[in-house]
Image (cartoon, rainbow, N blue to C red):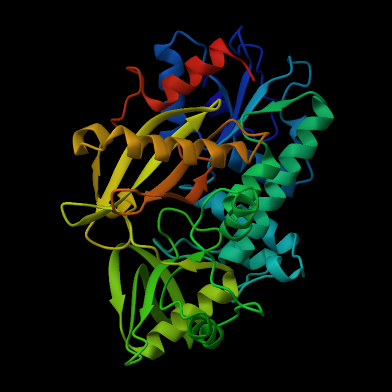
Length: 418
């Protein structure tokens, strides 16, 4: 990451990428100081590859706001690079710029409309960070899609033959849980059934009516563009008594007659209809994927699913995520275990790998993703794809053929460039 400090100091200074690896130039669009970028650079260093040159999101987004393009930022004389678009998270300035971009790129289509919360462009830039708060996710997603669109269009102007590890348009598709699951299902990939409804589910009342009509009493309600269990609710209704339980990481606070939503990093249980209605009204307005809550396979009374990394068509690293609760994400301090440590047999792992590879093949212009797969219980289990994460290769302390995730990916690329 030579030259990184200078790039931070001068946002419009062109990036010199002539020092990229002689095998395949790699340009990384990401956040320079986070664990993803550092992990990738460390892997390249261990393999004897020159570091990727990083185009920071904050530089990219602020340049756009001031009327500049990627062509003003990178050296247009460099060889056609391979571009890795990484996750934009974990940096407040980037989140604020994406909210600004979302305000500037509003859309009125049904599945793309702005959500319950919205900020003007000026308000977005003036926001101060409140740790854990979920800011206007539909607006953020507008900004993120606009960002991906501009990355795709502007880089193709500079290099018509540019190659992406994951195509910007397909990253958008993976990121929207509603469209992604429909896409996978249309191609024959097994996914949990969506809650059927003749009309869009816009609020808690619609949700309850649709669940009752479908006799689907247990559902997952997932923020369409959420990650890391943010905006995920395991919701069930007793059809006999009407009692409700919603388990989620989301907290709520009332401030100035407005409800603020937080991702608390721990699970909470709501049983009062008024609170559940507030939660569901917000999620449905922001855009939610609502699907059958399917019982997962268990190990020692803990439900589990598996994050399976697929790169270059190959199924590599896999990690089990185990929990006594319905939500298994690792950042909730759930237990992690290697499938071999858990004694998971080859029949089950073959089902996981096959499902993950089938999901990855649904994105022909993308090279890698972390695929979350659940198995059903019983002697004849089935595999269902729960999520496709275009940035799902950040897995700690997991090896495949003696290599970490980034080392394995870089080695694959060195052997068979995209």
